[in-house]
Length: 365
Image (cartoon, rainbow, N blue to C red):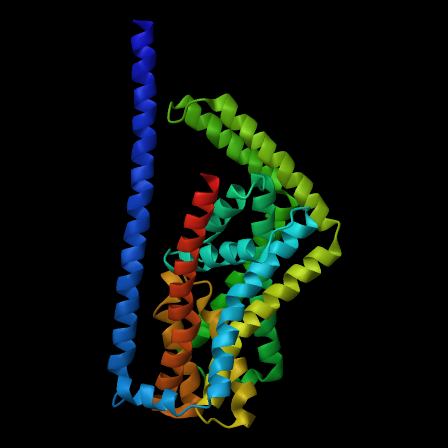
């Protein structure tokens, strides 16, 4: 009788685990399909609003563009992906875990791809953590690394936004009222998030204590089982996290490198519209104005909980570019630069992530 009860209990646990995995898969499929639909609607909406501009017109513009600057724009889009991997690997190296360029690229592409198809800007962090832990990096070290990188990523955006205001604050007043509201809210929210990440990094022990209390509560409600083993794993992660955060906080060079790589990552992406503009025959004297404009645009859409900020980013870019380029020029520049920095970038990141997963799975077998 007792043996039967044990088997039934084990079956119930397996069924619960199976249902959870199924729900997770369903959520991923839903957000992936939703993101594809949203991308399609965004492209359609932008195209419909661009009166008189056809795909043929854009292709003609591209074929007649300066090939050097066009190739440079693609390189800068690629550097956005590469620099994130370098940033993560530099933090891991400081914590005592050396990883090669392919591993760093995989951590980056998985983050970028899943961030683009989930409603949160941090949606890619679990995917990046998955590959890092598969490579044998302890969970606590992974957590500390990703929090630090996300904090520096956020600070880099705010830093570039502040630089943009200092260079030419008048550009901000050229945006529409809605865009001004989004940019202002972006500054506030991103500063708040940076403060939260810093607090978590410095006082991570409180977070682990909270997670422990939540696990205990769920165990009492019989929602989870095997509490002792879960608490042991949590304690191990807590020790790794505290050890890693102490190493990081005691090494200003790690913090500086993480900030510089994230700054280069953001700057490389922000520079793409400026470079595309020059490739299309734009005047060099307007290049800095476009860069400053794109810095403010990035502030305005980075906090919005929409997959890839689709729709919001496009609206801000068209609104910001109209004052300098006119309506048709703004639509052309937005479609080309956004296509490089988001749609092509995300698509290639997804392919690289899938290939990397298959390679690592084969190696594991």
